[in-house]
Image 1 (cartoon, helix red, strand yellow):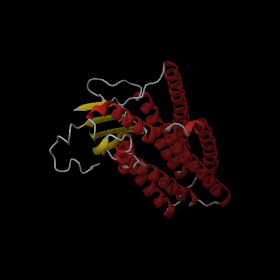
Image 2: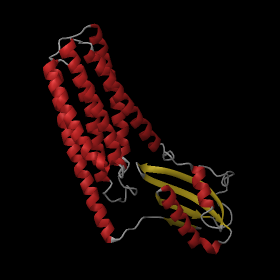
Image 3: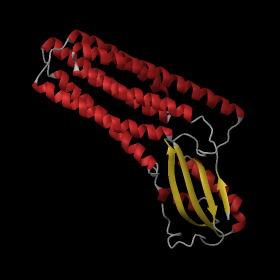
Length: 314
């Protein structure tokens, strides 16, 4: 019985360039986190001072996204830590665990904002619209700066791309806060403030639900999004003419972008094992981005003895 593991190996200069790129991404994430967290504190203080629930809600939204940026930074740094004897896969799943807990806390935040907003719709309070407008405009500018710093690199980095989506939600919340402040200042529509806070709470709810669904799927060892196990199996069957059967195929991800696979192979020619392993690992990496695969070559038929061994479970 043979086993193989596929790993990516790069030349020294490529590794050095990648390391510099990782550090650069971490710096951008840190810069975005510091600005977002600072603006979140400013909006919370401005909301409390001016009496604006919209600012407080947007501060809550920025709290979500500051946590998401910190999580992205944490994940980027933890991913560089080597595996050890107790955690042979490393620390990548910390990102998923933190995201799961973060998503749950946001549902509580949304409930508190919605409760206060509904109360204010029936009992409006006095709002210092000038303070509200000034803080909202500053928040809008800060979000534009943060989004600009991340956007240029979001297309080639999943982690930064996810963080950029959070910041885009912040930007929309800040636009809404500015519009609400203008409505309060020039039209005396005090109801615009709690109404806008409800809108921002919906943005938080949407982000929290997507994060909860994604992190739960990963924790349950679900198939990576956009990947079809049947397509993987078909591709592997065609990887080499000596492959007779592919079964016990499992694909999952340790964390975002870290895809794994295990599978059994039955061969027409046992002597072709080394060639088949190379072809399988190359197919998994090139077509599906799976960098770590454990492949078992069965001697004649699957030795498990389980009735469904060759029934192509996923």
